[in-house]
Amino acid sequence: MSVPGLRIPEEADLRTTLRSPTVAARVGVWLGLCFGIAFLTGLYSHALQSPPGWFTPLTRPVWIYQFSQGLHYLTGVACVPLLLVKLYAVYPRFFVRPPWQDRRAMLLHGLERGSIGLLVAAAIFQVASGLANSSQWYPWLVFSFRSTHYAVAWVVVGSLVVHIAVKLPVIRTAFAAPVDEGEEKSSGLSRRGLLRTTYVASGLAVLSVAGGSVPRLRRVSVFENHYVPGGGVPINKTARVAGVTAAATDPGYVLAVAFGDQEVELTLADLAELPQVTERLPIACVEGWSASGDWTGVRLRDLLPLVGAPAGSAVLATSLQEDGPYTSSELAGNVADDPLTLVATGLDGEPLSLDHGFPCRLIAPGRPGVLQTKWLGRLEAT
Image 1: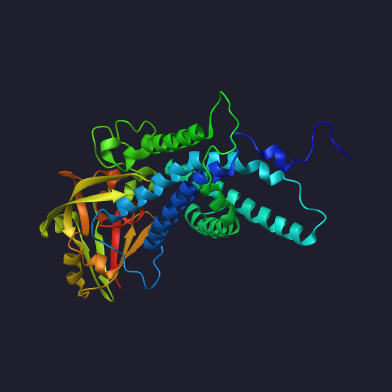
Image 2: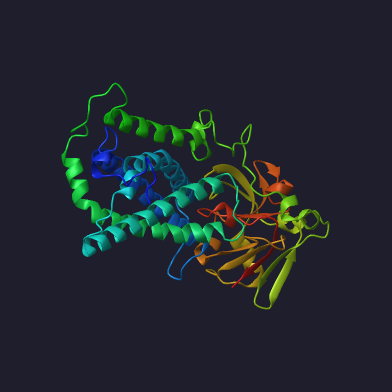
């Protein structure tokens, strides 16, 4: 049964002014480059949060994670216009009439369409979920953003490699030809105009949110939503949301430091009597924002000898927050020993505010913000 006015497109139907392999290939190169950068920087962020046994976190330069995660976020944003135009240029090919009479060709056709469908679905998911995460909006309830985003990233890269391998002859031909080859003259947008518009749109999209990672651009980043008026370090999670207000403001608060069967408990007064240092360190979060502050406190490596922990010990930092994600984090030995790793009690010349982690928090170079544990309750060397 056929529906009046509805038919499967023929190859000739797809040859329009703008939908051209020359356009798709050029946009595709930039899209693939952005996905590649986002993938590599995402791997680094994931390794910091779930480190494999062979991995040693980098602590220098101190802004390494700030740079890496900012690049991850901004290349993800750049993908939005590129992906939309790429899909516009190629989507009718999904509906090309299959070669029903040739079984082998039909099999190849089905595999190609299946791999492209997987690539498109995974790419859309990555971009959409990444943008939602940057705004701390999590409409999904049945899966973890980080683990799912990481898994689907491998699907995108694998599908992309297969797609490039299959389409390489077409890509070569498209780049060998001028962009406007065979283009019908029209008073509307040309192929070159479409490409220029796409690149400008991608650049403007990046500029509109780049202020979270590049402070000098904050005045023109109209969609950056982490800026703190007057400067300062943004706050992702408040003490009220974390449920730690009572524990953090308890006059009897102590910080436990332990190693094996040895343990000491330090009050804020005890911490204040230890050698104090102030270091300027950035804090950067997976949502794409970063900020720097002057953190004051005690070097973590000055606390470990109090319980006889040897140099190079890994340290498990546990928050007063009793449940929820990131209530604890582990510092590798080189991070715990780093002279810039602090148990901070002050920020920018003032005592820590409750939402910034009072009575004390962890701050270390080169770590994601979610691992800079706030409201410290226990430090255990292992």
